[in-house]
Amino acid sequence: ASDEHYKQLQQLINTLPEESGITIRAFLDGFSYKEIAEITGSTVGAVAMRIARTKRKLKALYERENNI
Image 1 (cartoon, rainbow, N blue to C red):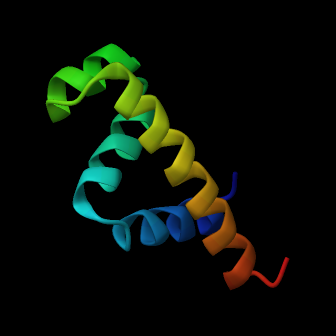
Image 2 (image 1 turned 180 degrees about the vertical axis):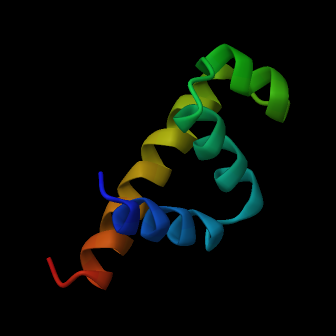
């Protein structure tokens, strides 16, 4: 991805609620679902659900901002 797309993704992540932002950043940094659960005090299932929802939300935000 280009630097511009990376910066845009970071800006979109910054608009997320704090817990979603922490979770998606940890996911993007390569942490396992188990590690993220330990960091956030959540269950692995909750982390998986939050990541899936956050990815869908980021995709929708990105598409809206870029008229896709």
